[in-house]
Length: 249
Image (cartoon, rainbow, N blue to C red; front, side):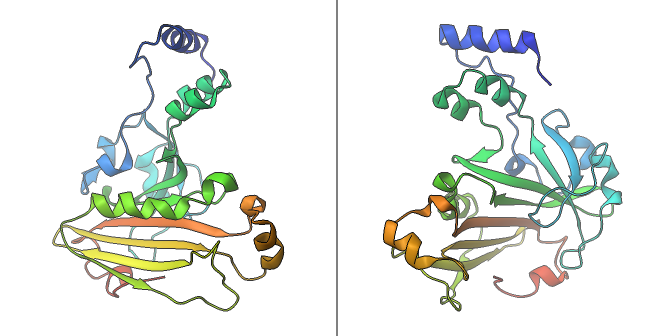
């Protein structure tokens, strides 16, 4: 919703170069302690909840996170996925300035410049037992081409156990992008966390590889470059199918 007062404050702050005038959402999904009740979530910062679709678009809209039981239980995790976005009001106000530097500063639903899809994994008792962060496949190709690079920051955030990674060979008609091919699945298991990550960077089957490679034109968007992070409470998914195997694709 457009708020003239907020817009005026932002313009005033930007004009004077004053830092910290933004009411932009500051809590992030990685700040949520696993085992927290949904009632403790920052409802004014995590907004528009809906049933998640395992990294896809939102499904059934929810009045709040307390309505999590309306979402289906996943067979793989035994948890319910609730999709949401960070409050992005100030980002849209910043877009009125039409300056990329300002828009970037106030971008809400991004991580290291990458647009992301976020969702919480909630158990039957209404406790947050995990979350997912996935690079958004709808991002502009010029940005999405670097989606695989989020794997580095994500790996650095979890160090309570060694990472185990498997690099898969190219599948049929999968090709590297300018000499770089990545199809990797990683897993970290500790007493606290089960963390899974899948990283892709390649041309997918069925694309006109010759035309794209000839002109080095990835702006057509015909490629896969993504990072998918899943974090779970080790206790909550100890016997779940998702977390009994080692790595997954």
